[in-house]
Every structure is written in structure tokens, then in C-alpha cells.
Amino acid sequence: MTAPLVRNRCSAITEKETRMTTPDEIERRVEEVDSARTARRSAAATEVGELAKRHAAIAEQLADVDRQLGDVLAGARDVMDIDEFAKVTDVPAADLTRWLEARKTSRTKRTRPTASTQSDTSRGPSAARTPARSSAKTPTAGQASPPPEPAVPRADAAEAPARVTAEVS
Image (cartoon, rainbow, N blue to C red; front, side, top):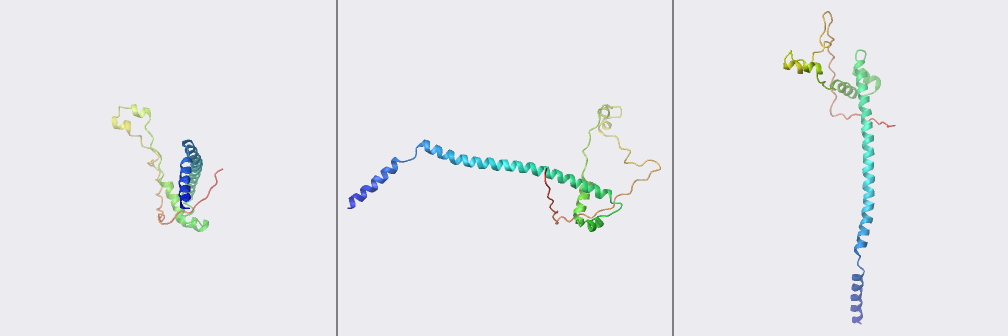
């Protein structure tokens, strides 16, 4: 009885060896697995790209609103201070101050001298590189310079800004 059992084992091994996958079948299986992975990768990359575009648009809108808030706050400083705005609007004073200070710290780009200034060599080489001073900065005779703006307390860096949700149309 032991002889037939041994023979069956050997015949089972032989059958497995003859049923091995062909190179074509292996390639087909790999392509099948890869196509599913490629589809998921493509979908994920597309979604990330779309969300990044949306994020950039919302960030641009939010930056514009921040500038507008700073402009309004600066324009109304003669009639209302930050603490009063905070009390009336229920907007934290730290946020109001941040918008106001962000407006002040934004700098304009330096302009290059015009062609006529660059070609004016009669005043020397440094005069061609130095733009003319604006008369708006220096008071003329009989006019007083505007008073400096009062100092505004800095926003506490530990406070997190409130989240603003916006929809992009």
C-alpha cells in the first residue's frame, strides 16, 4: 500500500512542473496589475493638480481681502481704533492688527531709472543711477508734515488666525 502513495506524490509534482506559467502569461499578469496602479496614480495626480489650482485661486482671493481689510482699517483710524473695531465687530484685535500691519509692510517694487536719467552724464556717474527725490516726501514752504501714525501693538505670534472658508466660482 505504501508504493501507490509514493507514486501519487511524484505524479503530482510532475503535473505542477508542467503547469508553470508561460512568459506571456506572466507579462499579461504584470500588465494587469500595472494598469490598475497606473490608473490610481493618474487619478491621484490629476486630483492633486486640480486642488493645487483651486488652492492658489483661493489664496489669491484671501490675500486681496486681507489687503482690503488693511486699507479700510488704515482709512478709518482717525475715527475708530483697533480695540473699538474689535468690540463692535467681534473680530479679535490680533487679527485686525495683523491685517493693518501687513498693509504697512508691503513694499512696492523699485523702478529703474528712465532712459533720460541714464543718459544724463553731465551730473556724473552716480547721478545717472540715483533717481530724483520725490517732492511729495518733503513738505513745501508753509505746509506742515503729516503727524506720524500711532504705534499699534503687535499680534501675539502664539495665536492662530481664524480660518476663512471661501468658494471659488
